[in-house]
Amino acid sequence: MHKYAGILNAFTRKHILVIGDLILDQYIKGSVSRISPEAPVPVVLQEQLFHTPGGAANVANNLSSLGAKVTLVGRVGDDKEGELLKKVLAERHIRTEGVLTDKRVETILKTRIIAHRQQVVRIDRETVADDPDNVFYRKTVAPFIKRNFHHFDAIIISDYGKGVVQAALVADITSMCRQKHIPVIVDPKVEHLKFYGPVTSITPNRTETENALKSLEPDTRRGLGIGSTKLNSMKVIIEAGEGLLKYLGIESLLVTLGEDGMCLFEAGKAHHHIPTKAREVFDVSGAGDTVISVFALSLAAGATKRQAADIANHAAGIVVAKIGAAAVLPEELVRSLKEDK
Image (cartoon, rainbow, N blue to C red; front, side, top):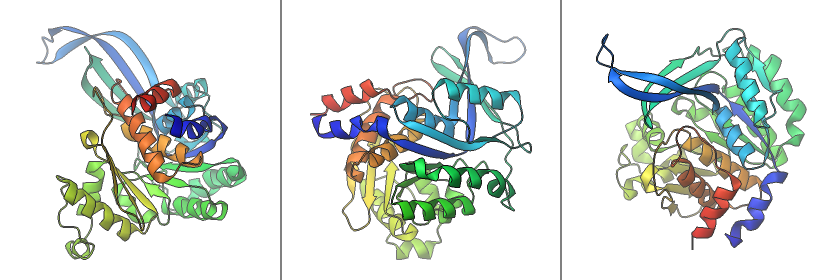
């Protein structure tokens, strides 16, 4: 751990801006002892109900858990779930003045019902409203970001495809980041691949990477040296990563591969594969949020991209052993890095 001590110690001095789609995660936990007489489904006796930040809000939660100062920008509906999400965020010391109300949408709510450590069902409530004329962005989001931009050491764009992340937003952010020489990292949505432009890095998982490859024309893939859209071997992963990096024209690409760890691609450098640190896997929900938050925070704290990816890999190994979209604690990350001899 000694080689990363300076980086981890700098976490608390960094201020990260997170922009993206906000979700309120609701968990109902209970036990099952019988099957319903109404339908062949289990009857869950509710024992516990709680709420956690989801989507871009979970990225902010991970950063705050590691001691960073966090400002969150996104939208909620004019409803009780939006107020509850802001309350949950404030309890985690996440600045909510950038959590803006859009009366055209409901706050996105994902309800997970869990019995005996097993998710029984998930219920989603959401209204996806794009901002085709950029009115909401120009009148509310853009002025807030520009007014506060000088405070930030790194930017994370967490794109869940729910309407907040638009081309104008990404163009403005990347332009401001280039001028200030600070990293901007994107958790991507395949449909928006061409939005992202000259960012520092994007962090797709295996499925997102495969979908990105499928979205390219076959001739384009061949021209990039990509032979398959299925990442079922390290050879294919390397071809795909190097080809996508060239196609997108970005500085780096960090592909998360579940049980196969992650692979970092940097312009002008050899790929870097990092085996997983996970010992137990209970729940992979939120693992991508952990990776992007720790990767970006480490870059802001002075890490190289390889160092940042290594630290993020340790964090992912910790969080998948927890139930739900959980956050990594500083002492857990320190312990994992110390154990890695």
